[in-house]
Length: 143
Image (cartoon, rainbow, N blue to C red; front, side, top):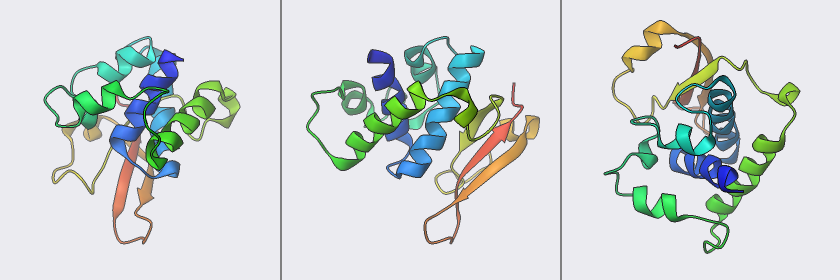
């Protein structure tokens, strides 16, 4: 249950849109399954400078890391917990992209493209709900 909470915390820290949460959740699961930046969900979630809301010093850090199963219900946190359980328990065959997709960033949130994108291949780009701009870009093959 604690691992599911760490997965939910990552997803909640990155987006409040359920379809995006699910994709972020699979990136985290891919990292755990391949041992990239940790072998547990907590290790991956707290690995330095990986997830903006879970970086110490971020104004949301203390709040998000305190979220648990008894946290007052808000729709986004409830969705994150439910989707985290789904991704955690899912059969690997339902993975939306290869296990080697372990990186993403938000072109909407960042002004500059991260340098690590040069080392990988864009696998999937997710547009904003209104289609006006890309919200997330998922990359394959970054080491």
